[in-house]
Length: 104
Image (tube, rainbow, N blue to C red; front, side, top):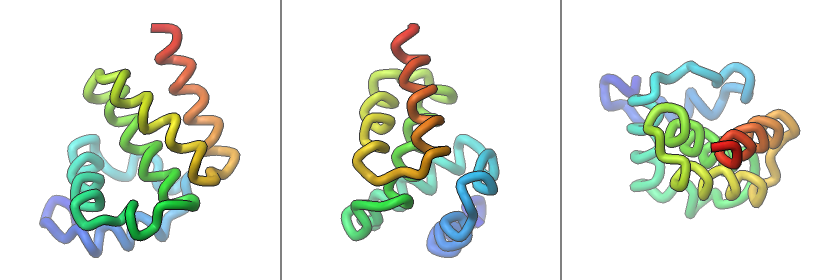
């Protein structure tokens, strides 16, 4: 759906998935495009707290760290995860990524 530019449908489908199901369902490019669309359409402003905000920041941080090689930008998103009441799995992934940044 992202490939076809159907961002609203893609966002609804993506956020219906559990955190386990959503892993690697999007390519890095599609993740960035969807995150950009969500940002431009004020998703995080409208839903600033809760697991969806945590997932959005975690996804953005992981793409910036692993795909774009931007640890400083990734750090900001990864720290933000903890302000959005993440589930234990998201918390664990964010901590692991922050540890990776610290080791660099």
